[in-house]
Image (tube, rainbow, N blue to C red; front, top):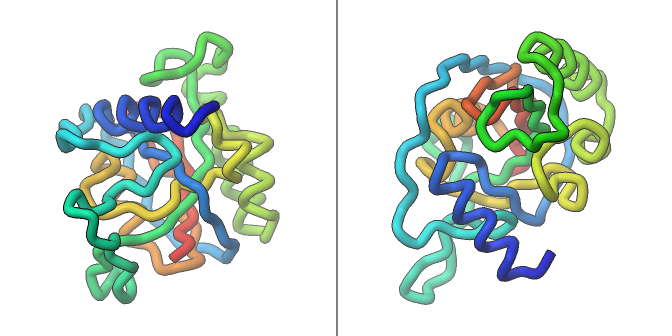
Length: 182
């Protein structure tokens, strides 16, 4: 996929609240945060980034802000990766996704268990994630600021410390297992 096509795809996902993927990663241990609301995503900013691109580059050409401190200290920008497990009927699920919500939840529990046992998170994303392009990025979403993801995902990701893995987070797009990378 070309960079321009990826940008268009991410802009569309951000516009309807799907977390945009990017291109950096790291590994680490465990944490928590379960969200199960399925309220629609907030509207995206006018110039939303494309999927696979950092979510908040400055419009005036200035360098984007770096991560500042821990989640508890109110980080402005973080890095994360995730595994998305969808079910038939979840938003933007491909027609090839035929599992039920219950089957998706069961699979998400398996992925979470394996991640917390220390399996390589990027490999789990390659093996299990239903997000288009996730395999090539190892599930990386790159860096993003608060408000760039759907509320449930945003709250869970920003509650994590670097290296931690969330509980299962439900959004309209499916079940996510999130690992904060920075």
